[in-house]
Image (cartoon, rainbow, N blue to C red; front, side, top):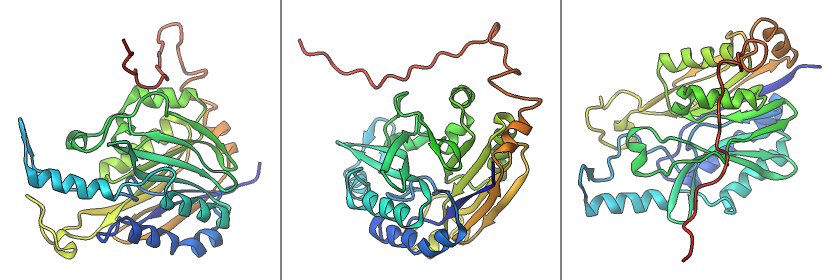
Length: 306
């Protein structure tokens, strides 16, 4: 099989809001098309925003009116799956021919979810994955996903699945995704740390799959006109670090730091077979006689009428 190009688009949510962020994404259209990428991964919560440093007025046991107003403003920046922002992303995929895996803040009723959307150039949104476990105080603003949104999607570049930020650290989730045959591990994130980059290499090496990590990049709070408690005003809120990794854990592109940009790499799908010669985590290197994983892929339980 011939090589295909995959890419990660690193940029940050615009402080002016979702509409401005969408324009930032669309401005990369020519570069995406020129790269020839068959699949492009965008960062976590790029549409809707990642409110780093925001407490939403919450302390244990009470919420403030000011915090509720902050949440209402944040809620207004989220996207509806049938809304104009997602339609614009679908148009971008159609014009460039590249699949897009995009991190968005999804509005569903009165609940927000941190979601990765899978967009096909011909069909638009074909699947979504909701973050299973919002991390720490993310639980103030995001609901938990469930097993009904854990897709692995057939794309021209391979079998794509998504794990958002720290759910990459959930061993059983990784095993479940490996068992679904994932070969393109898409990791939208806001984690900029060196240990995250080590984790991306580990997952590629453990799962014997290609990893595409797309991180937001945001300047310092001072540059954004914000104050963040216990944060140096001159230090970037998120410094980026997007990267593409081979099935043997070798870095093929990136990490890109401190600036927006598109990174790309030509990958050989046959490298999956070569890498799994000596380690197939759910095949010949598994021990199903000793270990079993049960996954509930049903949606959330609904109240029954009485």
